[in-house]
Image (cartoon, rainbow, N blue to C red; front, side):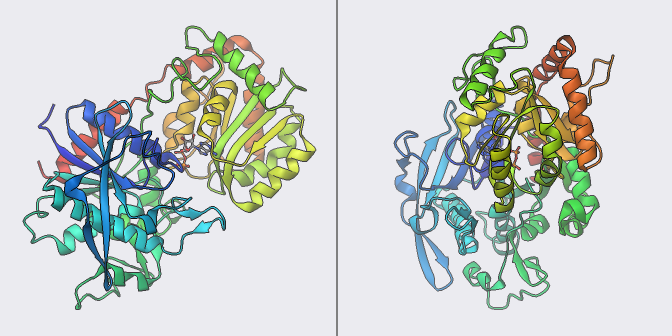
Length: 493
Ligand code: ADP
């Protein structure tokens, strides 16, 4: 091992404490992999209402009580608690500020399905609070590993306002972007909560993005290292507006700093051989348990009419990014094959409405569940035959990797992390692990689904395909090694 690093990882969600998507999965897994390599890794995250203090044994840290943070003209006082990531020795700090974080949603108000209006203040407090926590702890990490816009202000603060402070001047930062579409761009009025010096000019500054205050932009310009979560997507995001969402211009300035590191998956959580949430465990050597999971799934969702047709699953945010438009356009044709389809997800109202309508038309072969339900996600992953993920862009995507591990053959669009993890089945060849289509339209999607269904009917070929996927190595170790390298480069060591 290269010399032992001290790393603080800042995440706005950490599974199993809190999760709205893949970010939470990374927050719960990468720190463990780094800790296993011998590094001193700690995590910091907000304490949301949904975090069960008793279950996870959150304890007060005496030194971290009553930390005052200036926010515009006010002082806000935060407390920081501590617990361990389950099944590990990774220490997690929870920033407790009830008026901001003790809510039902993390970023979105579930009652209105829109972002909380005070999101800028909430995550300004989080960013400032993180730096003050370090000072109180008198712990100087080599690197603060920031993730997404919620922590994008940290590199900005470090570079602009703490450079001459001996406590912070040797702390470097890495910013990992999990989705360039979410940028944290807010009304510039929020800059008052930054308490910037009187001579600070917003216009043209690192914060200014077309007149709005951009948290991600500020992070990208000031972090010592920048990465996204697959190699392919690093190129895509830097290469065009379609994938960079305006950040490609910012990335040009950081051309030499941008890297792509593919996420791994947490095999303590996603492993059909040990998963306690599924009907029957199974492995690549003995797939019999998967048939039981499949049967249980069809019964649970009352899909009894086409038991021999493949079960296709989607577990996803129901948004345009995730290809819901394509699903909508090809829905009837897919039902006609026939297939069974199970969708678990939450998202845009228009897709909820469409899927509800389809539910009443195709109730014998289609089941949809509008909720976030981790346990159900495991049951679906284990019981389905195929996993459909027609994302128009996908920085990494974890669910296709879970699907591969569970022998649930992925059918995906060729983009970002999907292209980096799924290889097309080819008749007679033994390298494919799924089906991948190169044009984002309903015709191509249908052609590929039909191809998958015809291979499915050939049990021998299908089993080989499943097994190839199950034997893929998506462990976090590989990614963790690359992050360590990157931390060293950020810190100039
Ligand atoms: P993204 O982060 O873009 O939403 P990923 O594929 O990287 O997509 O990760 C999504 C994560 O969220 C996976 O762990 C997936 O199982 C989970 N997930 C998404 N929607 C749901 C849902 N409705 N219920 C349970 N888990 C979900």
